[in-house]
Amino acid sequence: MDWFTAPDYWLSRLVFQRGLAAIYLVGFLVALNQFPALLGANGLTPVPAFLRRVPFRRAPSVFHLRYSDRLFALVAGSGALMSAALLAGLADLVPLWGAMLMWAFLWVLYLSIVNVGQVWYSFGWESLLCEAGFLAIFLGNAGTAPPVLVLWLLRWLLFRLEFGAGLIKMRGDRCWRDLTCLHYHHETQPMPGPLSWYFHRLPGPVHRVEVAGNHVAQLVAPFGLFAPQPYASVAAGVMIATQLWLILSGNFAWLNWITVVLAASVVSWGDLAVLLGFAPPPHHGDAPTWFVAVVLAATALIVALSYWPARNLVSRHQMMNASFNPFHLVNTYGAFGSVTRTRYEVVIEGTRDPEVTPETVWREYDFKGKPGDPRRRPPQFAPYHLRLDWLMWFAALSAAYAHPWFMPFVRKLLRNDRATLRLLRDDPFPDAPPTFVRALLYRYSFTTRRERRATGAWWERELVEEYLPPVRMGSRH
Image (cartoon, one colour):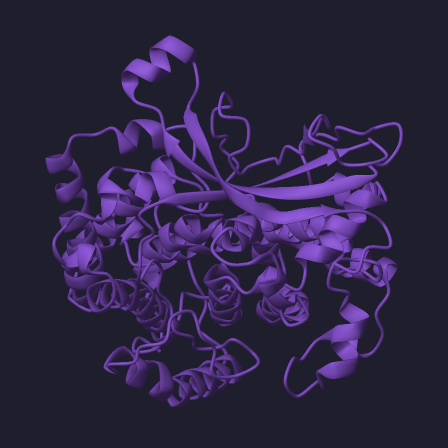
């Protein structure tokens, strides 16, 4: 069926599938390491309490059958093993239906985690992984050429991701329109990386070029995805280059990496490989009739569900990172419709003093990723996702009591809860828990070049106010 398959995209599919499997693997490893402390039976926002409030039809998940921390470890561990198997190419060694089941297995497991993940899994890249993972089910394996329809659905996903992000910026903060947002963004982004200080210190005109380049990548290049080759590959290449720039300048979990993987599915790698004298495309058999029927049905479903995201794109009240169905099949995307001009950080401290006095010595809790010690260089951890650190960035933008997880987190620190403390970089009270914990709000800014040379510090900080007064076990706070 010449109309149904695109043999020249065999390598494009291979790059996409291997890349997606790697991202799945990271996602499941993050869940294994962090989920029990955040969402386990004794976590900050326990899944069992969530399941009692939310029915299956609103949040489909295998955990509606039963939840336990052991079962969760089995689910996440199975997902990690299957991701590793797909990354190693196992799907190309089994029949077509077996490969589809492997990808469907991953999608069901990760969707089950996302749908009970509450605020910890409310990020756009979670829905993005679910949507891309669903489409991967229908891409087939080495036994058949990639289906044209699914390749176009991947382009439609990439278009919504990039064009939606571009529109939300132009409709949002004025600094995107006057090209000044990156005067602030490298410093105030949720999780700066090792090079963010250097990006922030680039000259103003370079920042304007950065913003203009972003607009080209998100508002112009997406339309090139639907052009003939090689123009579609050029459009995808612009997006890949932009995403690699973002990877260097900050930590955005796997958002940039999955965008690169999606864009890679557009590039005609097969033509390039043949041109350069690499291995020719493998021989593909004819697509089975049942496979054609399944792909047509999946395509019809995605087209039907695309009405709401498409309407959202042209709406004056565009929503960002929203799902219109509980299966996260066709979603809206976007990021940084507004850019904060000042960076605030919540710094949590504890003491063992029996009473709080002006002479009380406080010890600071250090997080793995978010800014704390001004002399500590921002670390690189993306595509790994430090969920608690990200939520601490949001916490600094509003009062402590606006975040239902914050006080349970403080109470865990007062108990020296081992699982919670493993989410942090170190424990200032390894022998016994603190008697009091408090939180202070600081204003952070990158040091100047002169300050950096003189002090070795990456940040300077200024106390703004008390974010949470000292609390102890049994406090009403």
